[in-house]
Length: 229
Image: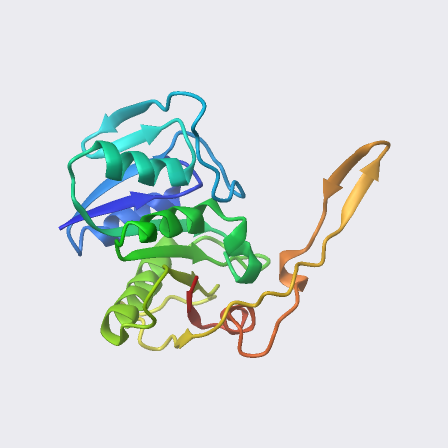
């Protein structure tokens, strides 16, 4: 089957390369990803200008639009007949209210509107975390296969967050728990540094509220979290 790959970190991001490797286990990965980094763009779509699509290598297309644009163009204007959509792997968590701001989550949400099984995948980074994309692939596989076996929920997309671990996990990653949970809808603690009339965000992701048994608490605690969004 054809698997649509996208993200909001851009087509050259290491996370999307890891996801392409994982997707090859399920079928043929076909990537439509933004030409640039667009974290935090939410579900923005482009309707007032043309969107350029350039094939940069075999089955890899750079799109001058948002993650949601990538999905819309790929589904509506190409004949790939996608059977799965994977968005990510985002460099950073998309937990709780993040899903409403995340371009990674928006791409999966857009695909779900077309009835395609869709997953948003994000790698939470705790302070001092060194990226280990080999670990991320194993954890992402575990989350996707857990959902496929359990058929969690009905409508929407699956938002999967991968914990930040200090040690290498095994290929099966069976030692890492998978928890189906609710989104923590408490807001971030927001702080800005002011210089005259300019405000620079200085919030601390790790200090956010942790609702008991929510995706934030469980992922921070070392579990792969799965939520319907």
